[in-house]
Image (spheres, rainbow, N blue to C red):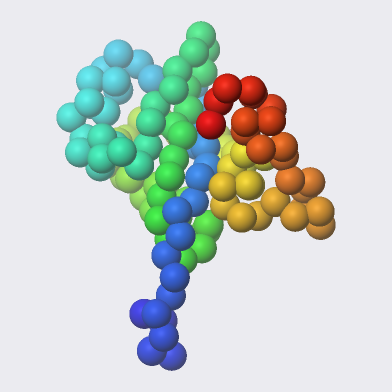
Length: 116
């Protein structure tokens, strides 16, 4: 509820947190033991020389959802988040794709036949 006594709608927000550098093996071991990173809201994706977390967090605003995701890094010292990304598909999922912001991307099934 907000201060006026009305209920604030919670939405699921999709975004990506890019890390400054890949995780070390020690950081990966620590991450495996942190329940807050293993509850389904964040997924680690790694490649040669990079790491990122794809995120789906609930919140009244995108800012609140990102802030909650970033707050989890207090329990996981070491990795630094370099940037937050909203890809076109995330803009569509977040109901933020408008002609004034960014043209709406084609539906996933149109861009990738056979994928839904």
